[in-house]
Image 1 (cartoon, rainbow, N blue to C red):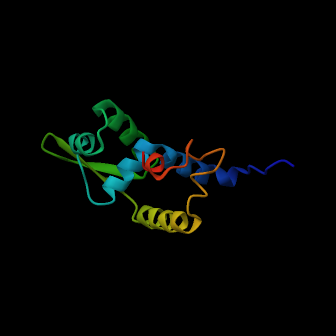
Image 2: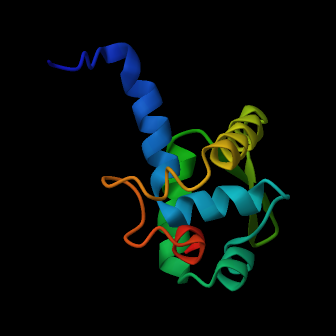
Amino acid sequence: MAIDCSPGLAPAVALFRSLGDPARLAIVRRLASGEARVVDLTDELGLAQSTVSKHLACLRDCGLIDYRVEGRQSFYALTRPELLDLLRSAEQLLATTGEAVALCPVYGVPDGSPAAVGA
């Protein structure tokens, strides 16, 4: 049986893909607590500057974040409060499914351990 991949699903697929990368999700979760500069994100998340910049550009292209300039610094922030609601809902869903998502043979982590899930 074929799955109906109607064009109406494309925006949702793009949204979840944008949040599906561990680095982008970490950036979004960090920005949920307030705005940050690239240097803040690299320090707090342990990611390279080029990695952070690349992922910020992706999130910006998706309309999920934006930045404001102050002097020579750019401060990034979430653009949509609904994104926080989505993250809270995802956390609630994950809490109720236990480790089922982590143990998924297609999208789960190799060993399903909580340490690997948070990695």
